[in-house]
Image (cartoon, rainbow, N blue to C red; front, side, top):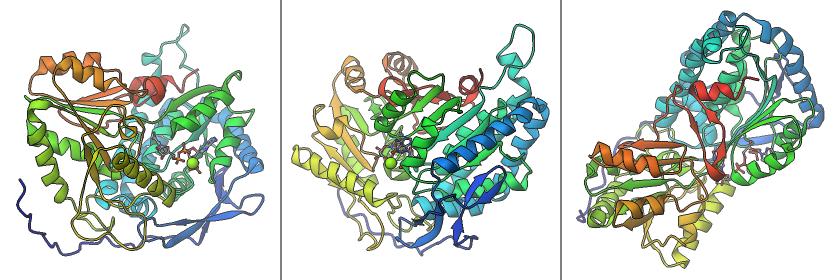
Length: 483
Ligand code: NAP
Ligand code: MG
């Protein structure tokens, strides 16, 4: 596998960036866009070029108050809207997301840095699928959640939803679709660095005539999120993001009547047994750790390989890594794009230095040079990693893989569970009984067998231990939005 892989010079295949961008975006409250009370805005940029894209409103406590008041007012009528009518709104959102798919994919790539191939083929279609799926649920809730008197189950009320920057539109869909299907109203805060697609979704909500106040979108930084969490008239908080912020939210909600679901970080194991289809497993590793530059809460960031095939796996992984195409995220050939922010890049680089300092061996993608502007890091993996190493324990949230080996299935399970997290896991084996036995013993919310990072709106997704609690997707996900 060593030999020199000739660099294949593809012709650039850039997607057109012709999408409408306003110079500045207000807050989406009570069905229309308005300037924030204090008149403050911040600049949002393209992380692949550092070019400014637009200015985004900063919502302070007064704005959050207005958004919550709009959601409270809208709740009265929305929860009484016949389920079949609510379903029509969700269907319309789904159809409109599909119709405006190209524009949403381009905007997402420009604001997030992830490859257009991913936003076009995964983020946007999955977001639409989430609305379609939940549209179908609206008039069937009473069968899945029967009440004593046969009436439809009641919504929780006004939901504060706070989402991260790694899947901006998809996370908005994961949050909004089940909430609306159950008759709740929403105040959603996108992440500071990636507000554009959520704001475009707000335009879609206007286009389909969703009643004002049912969904309110307030932009800003952590302080805006804090104001939502602390608000006295919110019935439920749904948060996706770091374990650290999740902990602080849990502490601030404790002792109130607010309901809470948390989708937090992970350090998920991806286990390859000697009897696995190795080439297929390598592709699984690529999608587990290099898709979305590894900025995925359920990334398979710890690769556990059975010792007898470790050399083969590592050499094939090296070969595969060299064939990645790293660069312009808007190029349709690109596999790995830019890191979302300078802060995240600094964090990833700190971990890489730490891995080297602790004595693990660093293997990085070395083809070509990285763009001069923007936030770039070479996809990499570490071998010779010990379970006590920082890069084996902490969530990096970047394209950095820690490779470790095991000898027996018991050792694989022990190593896989040797973490404070429990979000996802991958098991690669050609024996179904083994996959089943191993999966049963792994402490994680989602376990994939002979695949990785597969999402379906009908399949519940969520964590265990420090990865949070509550599920999103399917029947389990709806439960969190019903009283
Ligand atoms: P984060 O701070 O947890 O951000 C998640 C969301 O919460 C964002 O909308 C954020 O706003 C908001 N927020 C921040 N502080 C808050 C507070 N005190 N109360 C309420 N909301 C608050 O995550 P991050 O700063 O973007 O990333 C930090 C690290 O978290 C990453 O390096 C990564 O390891 C991890 N992470 C995990 C996930 C995941 O899905 N598990 C997602 C993202 C990040 P702002 O964006 O405006 O700060
Ligand atoms: Mg933050």
